[in-house]
Length: 421
Ligand code: SF4
Ligand code: SF4
Image 1 (cartoon, rainbow, N blue to C red):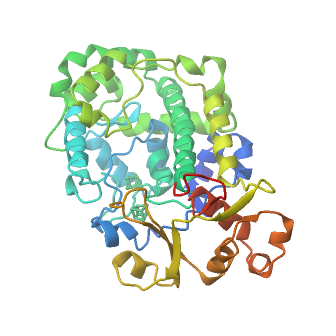
Image 2 (image 1 turned 90 degrees about the vertical axis):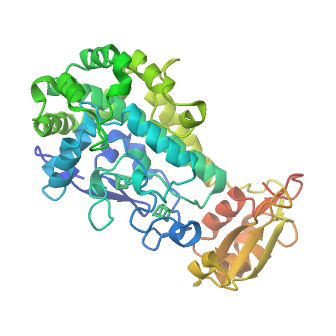
């Protein structure tokens, strides 16, 4: 992708393995990312949203029951897009953004975590993301945050898929933090001074929530934005200009020797943490580490590469594999909401849980997939001869399907003692 000096190429999406990501992400990660095979996540269809059908999510919010951390330069890029600008200006005016990007004050976190603990994710209007537009769509889709861009309520690869997306979020989130601090300083607010100011406000943490807007009180924003107060849009656009100017060095900046010098307002973060109960703290991902060293971006990228490789591993010639004894293949009878949602797939494989009370996990299948699974009714070694059988040779995505079934324990090593998980 080319990117002009005005950054026009960053005001869009790039497609990778069926996913549409903010265009800037491909510049934030090493070139190898363009060859990384990502899970397609065929189990979900966000247009119809299975969670509305099966779990009672609100159709006007779905999983956008969440306050996203959008870094300052992404807000700036969104402001450069005339379609997004009015919405971003409103979010800024409501006090949802500080110089680092969008953040929540303690009062907002307390409300959100109480809703999560009451099992109201997806169901509560109070959790509605401020970036949802009037028709219930993401108003900043090409500029959305890392958690938003890599959240899938169900995945093709079971726990291995969860780990992959978690590692994906970890590396991009770390890069975002580093770049937002560099951009902030370049745009005119020194990052170290900003964090020292936050620390100095720690004992006023209870006074920061603005109940009228759900954002942060004016006095705090005035102190932190300084000369940019009430001219925040210009500041965020200057942050965007920093990443546009350094578009070919973003990963290098994130992995430079001094990248671990990123600042954290320890005292302020500690006060945030103490304002939440133990249970509430477990509900949020946005509190940065208040102790320990920052993991270098290079190490996080390496971990992601390993997770990506594990997604597609097939135990080729390594002992026999069979259908999990706890798996049952049957007809999709379309007798409940989930089976009706997958009504185009004629079959289902059900995996009974490890306890009598656990609901079986169900995966809906095409006939070609059923034919492949039946090859494993008796234990077989996965080797070239198997791929020559008509059932597999005729199905273009057979290898991917086998990898997914192995990750989800639909297929297991024949000598595996705990076959269900
Ligand atoms: S990720 Fe899941 S909950 Fe969110 S919109 Fe898609 S299907 Fe619905
Ligand atoms: S930023 Fe967009 S994708 Fe993320 S929660 Fe908000 S509306 Fe949803």
